[in-house]
Length: 434
Ligand SMILES: Cc1ncc(COP(=O)(O)O)c(C=O)c1O
Image 1 (cartoon, rainbow, N blue to C red):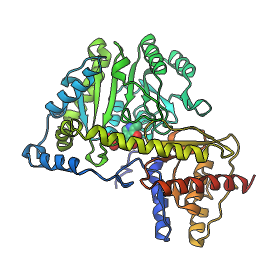
Image 2: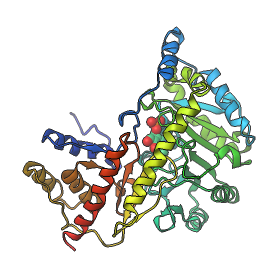
Image 3: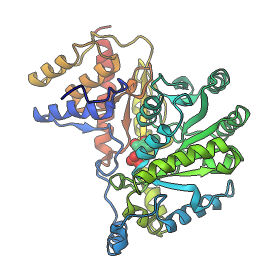
Image 4: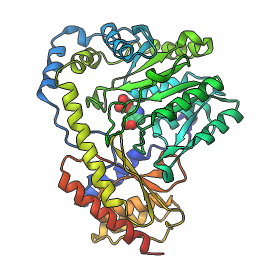
């Protein structure tokens, strides 16, 4: 090439996928791997019900499902979704306030990249990587974050949030993920109302990622942004990847609240729409299926059954892990992730787990010789020794070492057995070189 043609990255990588490369290496060496790292219910064995498949087949029979759709998305589907929002009795919207994307990941990338480089959105720490990567890529500057506190059930530090938005003039928006990925935290009403108050007081807009909003359990309830936002400008991000579950459809959308109340916010939404126009439209077929799926008599029941399963696994994991020394463990109450943090200073670069298979041991030793984060080292040894594949917590852009796993396993006994092996491995690892 005449010159270096690749754009230099932000230096941040999406570790959730990198771990898979390591796991693949282990599979090549004949080891069984238990994937607890990726939030895809279908890959984890979720059986898609026949009535759902029937609806998709019906939609395929309509030639229009092969066509482009309007840039914002299929009108009747946006009307259906606007009605769902309006039924909640909070802010009222129309089909015009909804824009579809090719998955929520696409919506996230386009939303941040439509902002001025010096306009920043403050995010939770740890945070779901796609938000942080997109925000940092747009600004080319380190992120602004507010901490989720593991010593307080992962409740965010609201004083830190207010202090930062007050002192950083560049912060124009607050991101909330509710229920949260990776912590599984479910925001109580009073915290949500306080965040809306802060946004109003400092003239900010809100981004609420609500992809897991209908997945809460253990008696926890939460509210949607549309119910509490009042007249503050905001964007709710939603999708069908987790709820349906249909991640392969690549279909998500944003709901825009109060665009008419702030001209600068309205210009941001116009910029997002302009980007979308350059691409024509998003995936048509899943959009056409949404109203049929969501208003089917079995939809709520099926979602409820899955949520009950996540509740069960959340309690199994919590009961097995809560008394494991060296860690901070909170019960997950929403979404399908659980995060375990290590206590301060318990990890170092000498610890290891015994790996029987020699070639696997050598491979793990090779990838842990470099100066890597201590939790990453733990994750690789855990994978090599037990086949349990989780994600290091530092991949979610926090200094707190730990790991995130999923609650998606369909086989309850296998899950419980894995939790017990995990508990034992944590102790063995920490004590191998204290
Ligand atoms: C909080 C959160 N937002 C957005 C997404 C992206 O979803 P999609 O599959 O629609 O791109 C995920 C996927 O894991 C997620 O956890």
